Amino acid sequence: MTPAARPAAAPTPEDALSTTFDPRSLSFWHATVDDDLTPRPALDGDIDTDAAIVGAGLTGLWTAYELQRRDPSLRITLLEKAIAGFGASGRNGGWASALFPASASALAARHGHDAAVAMRRAMIDTVDEVGRAAAEAGIDCDYRRGGTIVFARSDTQWRSAQQEVAAAREFGVDELELWGAEQVRAREARGAVYDPACARVHPAALVRGLARAVEARGATIAEGTTVERWEPGVVHTDRGTVRARHIVLALEGYGAATAQLKRRILPLYSLMIATQPLDDAVWDELGIEHGQTFSDGRHLIIYGQRTADNRIAFGGRGARYHWGSAIRPEYDRVERVFEHLLATLREMFPQLPPLEAEHRWGGPLGVPRDWHASVSYDPTTGIGGAGGYVGDGLSTTNLAGRTLADLITGQDTALTRLPWVNHRSPNWEPEPLRFAGANAGLLAMTAADAEERATGRASLIARAMSPLIGH
Image 1 (cartoon, helix red, strand yellow):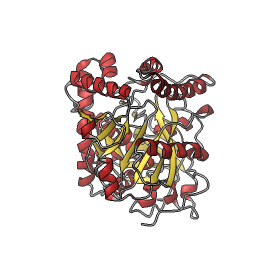
Image 2 (cartoon, one colour; image 1 turned 90 degrees about the vertical axis):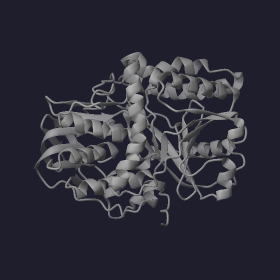
Image 3 (cartoon, helix red, strand yellow; image 1 turned 60 degrees about the horizontal axis):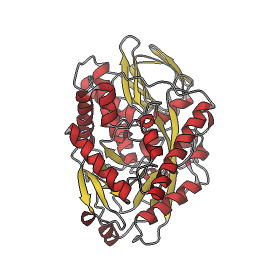
Image 4 (cartoon, rainbow, N blue to C red; image 1 turned 90 degrees about the horizontal axis):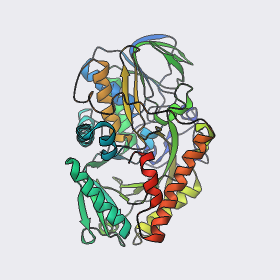
């Protein structure tokens, strides 16, 4: 499939519905998905339904899919402002991982050791469940479970890697392996932590395939439909009123654009590039196999994968938070960050040939105040939702969908007893405190990496920040 040309400016949800706009320009994933991305019809007036799901990303679609498995008779309507998979669900790094934004130690401190173990087991099981469910639905999303390699590229990162593996052993769930320098081929790496609980995925193929699957089972996806507000039993949109017994809020970072969720979630931008395809010989020298994802031990997060067509899809944080939790199309593309990502790849793998960023894109992810993802449902009001994945949502959305389906259908299961169920994060501070705090955190992580390079010791800045970011 021929990739679309990179647009001069990032698109808006309204652009995605225009007959003159090519939605393949949203990201590399949208450019290469086997789907024509034609918008579905908008809501056409007032309707009654059993479950109204606000947002047709992975959280909303997995919830619909799992509700259909439990009760095929349910009438389900998904309300989407743009097109299914427009946001983070279609633009992310493609890691179906067992990562959860709150660490096992943080979960144990808050909820107890047994609850932390249960959450870790659920997350690890979810990696396989994503692949199983995708296969069941006939979705070809390049799913391959090859694990994650986190390179330790300094003595400090190597000591942190050893500590991470030791900490994981205390909970007895994660099967982390400590690889020495002889087991990794990345130059200048002291070693790595290998986590087998991760799969490489084409995210747009997954989310678009899931949309087709729930439609085939009878759900309705109303695109081009803006939700304005909700209350028990009713969702108000610009296209009509939806009356529903159950309402699921599945907006993630875009929840900050609504009055009712504005201080519940903070939209933080993460940006990505995709290089030209590389020869197999290059990948052999890097030591990264198909199905594997990779990162390193720095504090300012980066993430990469070997795509099915042998590109490097690589992303990272570094774009600043914008005043008032603003979400605007121009924030999706920051040339300074794209150039930094290219430079980071060259630094990590000096044996790489000259690289080109053939695709550049980005988008907001959702950050709760305590960096603790949650799933909730109130049987009294009939309103539930999930989110706050802090970028670890590709597989966590599947766990959320299964859990919400159990909660909505009134089942008492191991999933409904997990510690993230009905967890409520505090609100973010009002401006200007939110702006100052969010951007200070970004600067702190950048400074922590610089501190470790300069001193050769674990960063005091990072240690001070750890409780604030769920570690």
